Image (cartoon, rainbow, N blue to C red; front, side):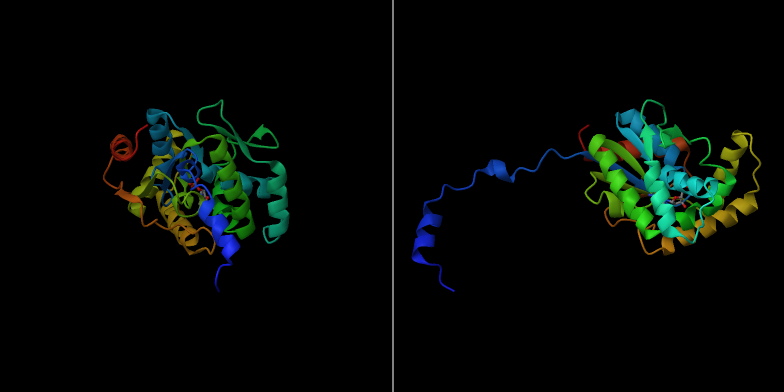
Length: 250
Ligand code: DC
């Protein structure tokens, strides 16, 4: 259809848009670290964040907190609406004055509870609840808005939550190595550790985290993939820091 002459005249006499309208707002500095259980993501993410002066977000702690709430409030695991309502009511957030930041529910720290075996045993199916993930993704984006210089660690951080992250990492390792690391970690905390049982649990969690419909564990196409099987924690942190520093000015 032809543009009416009067409209054409107005369009032609308008001042061209100034470039300032095109400039995007200052980009937050988000670094994502995803990967399966037992790759040491949390500890290296936390150390990386400390080295480069960013905040650290442990999104697994949020799903673990949800699982702890389900157990401690005796919520029927099949009643997903009740789970989402209870967790939303708990207003999960972090106390950023502690290192690492402590996860809080109803303004009370629950970080001491979230790594207990009963919580670990049910966290993967809880984390597969679609509506719960939507809630967590919203919360994680709000946290990033409040802490725009962030290392965020989980399963879906680079793929779903922060697809525009400045740098994305995907850490992987042999399942047997991951089971051994988990066992060493538990023993260091004075807890019992059965390596064969831990390996079976890790494999089951990998399967369930990768197979779920919402926010499955996948490696984003644009992620830097690092196999940590034969690397020490220090080597992994060094490598991550090097990769970050060649990509962005901090
Ligand atoms: O990293 P972790 O072991 O603390 O994670 C606990 C569980 O939460 C694990 O089963 C995967 C799930 N999780 C998730 O589904 N999405 C995330 N962003 C982080 C963790």
